Length: 433
Ligand SMILES: *Cc1c(COP(=O)(O)O)cnc(C)c1O
Image (tube, rainbow, N blue to C red; front, side):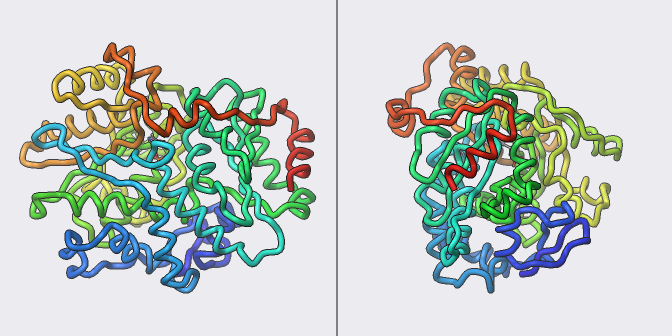
């Protein structure tokens, strides 16, 4: 498979080059030259296949020539180390639980897959590769866990001191080994500026082989298609395909779902469920895309003011908004509605949502209210215990803890504290190379 920059101003690359580079030199996102079509025979036989077999079939056309088949199969087996069940919540609403991985968010799939691909690509390199990533929370944990112990790769996670949750901080700082955490006395934007500066620092890049694990990387984006195939595998009424409601921030997860549909997977409709960060809902109404400053909400992994992956979705509809709107819409859900939804679904259905899943649930419920013969699932993207500070007061109960959380609590936090100072940051990177 060949990947082209969406800005059309960079050389085409293969999967290996796209994974190592992250973004094209012209600043565009990489996009596959063509979208593979899956055979009817495969789609009809999914119920008889294992998740690994399905994932292998889906991924193979995208990596062919870059990773040998047997290595790809091993990578997929290591990636899929947790179940992804479809759980009924209401008569017409199901929850696709994507959060059973090590760091309790759906990002584990993309991070595990990418880390193993990168490990394979650099295994014969003389130089160690350093993955540099700024995080406001969930990404850093999934990347740290995914890359832990991968030979030839070290990870530097840059996060704002005091601005991530207690669970998230433990997930960033307790690994050790090839995972390093830098705690910046500043905001997430400061962290991102330091990281961006490092990527453009030519003299630093002469010393260190730097790459990013950003969510736009094709090796994180493409495997997220698996979720949608596993949902359909578990879908009972195959003649009445599901509506999929996906809590969206940077629009990577939902973009993978749309890609799966373009390959032939039956999905009736997509609902992009947003919080107060409503660039896309506004765009679909006005046809004017106006990037915003992000605003803080209780579903903070979706606080994105200029979602990077939305251009990939447009690309799949030749940038024709009206065509897109035939199968796609987007709504904005307030924090107050999100809280009420968590309380109501817990009381009525005995199902505990996290704030992100609650946004997805309510968006789906609203859609189905005007489409009574349809059914759907929403993506439950994180375990509610990750957001216990929001959820527990709403339901007046504590959430039973999990082994993975207990395990972390006793581990020692290890981080390097720095000021918002590029020289200090730069010197630290050189000191661990
Ligand atoms: C990252 C994240 C999202 C948003 O996913 P995108 O692919 O950026 O749209 C939603 N929920 C949780 C819990 C997340 O960590």
